[in-house]
Image 1: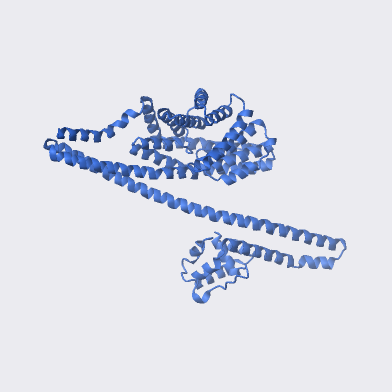
Image 2: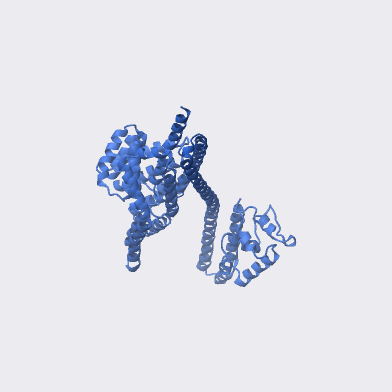
Length: 546
């Protein structure tokens, strides 16, 4: 009787290894095979995408295009890069904004601002995206452009809700998205994608999930797999079925969305990461890790900080799952050792099983170690990126303000000097006019104002700069520090420009209005006074803003 119980316990332990196969429908198993095959072909798909883009860029270089044609070509390239590569998409839409300013077309201004807001929101730069949209007067837009404008406002709130998931602000962003969806389906044509998609998502959030599903499933056949809209609609249907707690259909539409993403070289995607969560819940750890790794690689290649953060949130879950699998393996090993002591006839089979478990555990440990190393690297990269963004924002804000103040002051002084010269010319006071033109006073005053603004701005950004420089200097070569004056010496200004990334002697000489020989002399003298002469300028570049 006791032997029978032990054998049953042994079989129960083995059951989870085979139970998962029956949880996936035949259609979804087929879609998994298709998805895995496409992922293997992804490098080829991406090369084909790049080849199509090169055809457009090559044509742009050889053809003599006017400004409007340049705008349309840059906009086309932005559309190609939109879900493929953030940096290039940003570059081309930025070029569009420059072109539309010269063209002076209000509709193109709105179009480029909406597109810029989208690419900024995708990567999580919400404040700048909002500024882009705030610069648009919605009352002056055409119906088509107003739909795009409201679409972008709603979309930005959805991205914000993804960042605020599991926080008290999540519902606030969903409510804002709902508001803009209402505005869209009040003005969009009823047979258009914008009307149907926004009406369906609004209906779902209002609680009528079945109606929302029906609308999108009827509309889906009009879309082409591999197109970004197809990916969005299928991903949204997966979300609808999740709300109905129909995990089979949720998985089905996530698979369709992921297949479409890979087919269309859409690297700004979400479905692979969602699939990895489903596989993780089903204890398919290897496949979950593979899809999460692919999702992380796509986010890295695209350049989306938002998607990278979402992938990073999933990584600890996968690690814990591996820990759970290892614990379960250890439990099965102990149980199996107990059975060996009773069932001598199963000794050989038991040894083989133990060896297989040990191998699995070793592989699991190796995977956990690799994942921990990758997670640590990602965290360090994120911390470094956040630090750079903070410093960049401080420098930008400080120097923009100082630049505007200095420009205004110089314009005012120039106007006053022009009035004086005109008055002397009008009164035929030629000697005084000549003396005023010959006088270097105005130039010297401009240089003084420039130095004053530069010193103040720089010391606001790097308040401990002089103290940090003194740490790098020998004891008998310290710079004087005074809290009463926000001024730098010429030597310190040279170091300040080096800290801002300006290392060329000619560029420093031009900014400080000195000769290149003087700048070379200053730099050589400063190095000779430093403690670590060889790394002195590199140490200056590492001085932090806070």
